[in-house]
Length: 418
Image (tube, rainbow, N blue to C red; front, side, top):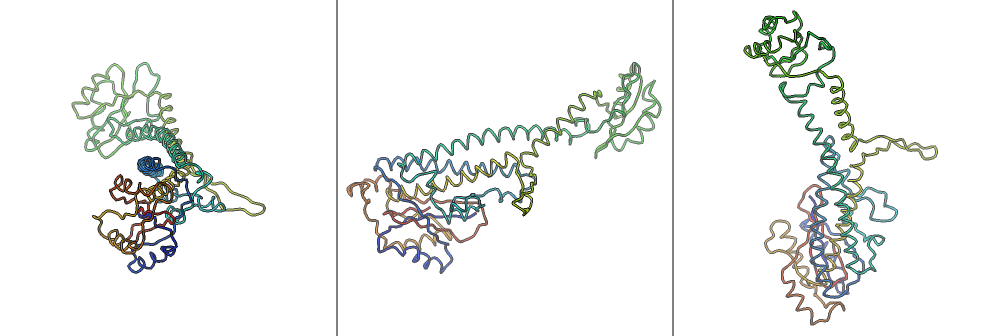
């Protein structure tokens, strides 16, 4: 799991080299890998609107993270037979440069090379409009996710139920995949074929006694058609009028007659249903190969993913990209509102060490004023309204390590950590 802190630092002339200085002090102990995190000049608006947005963005941030986790879990569930390839489908496709839109970008690279998407979220729009666009986008993805995963879960549950029946013991399991028409005497007015469950240790006893369990049992009519660890399923043919007597005698000898009537149409229906469900479930993930040609050149086969996996892959990318934009908005808004603060005093380990270094480095960074977004007199009010410190972090799937990724955003008079 990679962890990212987004740090907003003042951008006055004295601190233009802040990133270089941060690199110098953090590289000594390998505390973090630092990159620039560019946020455009967004429309600040009024102080009241920023206060409202701060709360709204916090909730939207939590919602986006929850949605992304659910989508990642759905990818894992759909790819149950190929879990080693899950990471290949959790990417942030495009989003760096226009010429790189078609590339598969891993999540860490996307964050460390983040660029604001001006087409989707125009910086000239008021911040509430940008936030509303992000909220509606994520809400639509969640709605579609619920519908698609519900359909897949229903299909999977039905298939699992049928599989459980196929794997159950001889007393309860489905027999459609076991029996054949040739195992039974059908369409006879006098004869009938029964199925008898015989414990493994009683096979010899069955062979010796089944013909004498009742009158009118057809000699040499028994056949083992299936067996599991506990016993076997035998056929036996007899006259219809002695069925009840045969069942009673069989029970006395620890043989169990399984109630079953061979209906070819029903057997065929069950088999076709299982095949249909297996095919439908497989198609949600299954990949097919398509040869791509361009001019005289033939490219390697291109794998086309099933509809659900394809949707999850595309929309996970969209949701993740939206989430990082929400993080950027929180940095922007809280930089203006909260003033220069570092995080929780209770940190330990590499996080505490990095925080300590940042404190020492930032001692020379001055909070500055509100850059015109509110009169200086509002500064004390804002400090009171946001007296608690804030530490905002972004975590992405990946290998864990002691090194933190730190993104620095310049040009705003207050600091936020993420």
